[in-house]
Length: 69
Image (cartoon, rainbow, N blue to C red; front, side, top):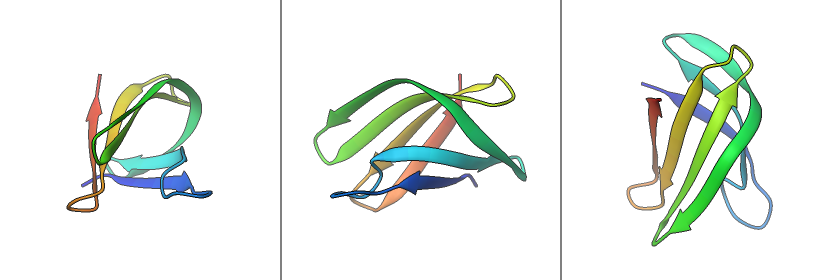
């Protein structure tokens, strides 16, 4: 299970800061792309180790879907 840490301003999940993947915490080095859909927010990010992930936060059921690219 992946855990996403994010910065929240006016809304939850404004900017991802780090994620835990495979038991290892990875800081986010860059946000490559981001988008909004109905009841979701998506990010394509690059971790400090160079690995790229797609992060999608769905408001219902209040969970993150994380997959390496």
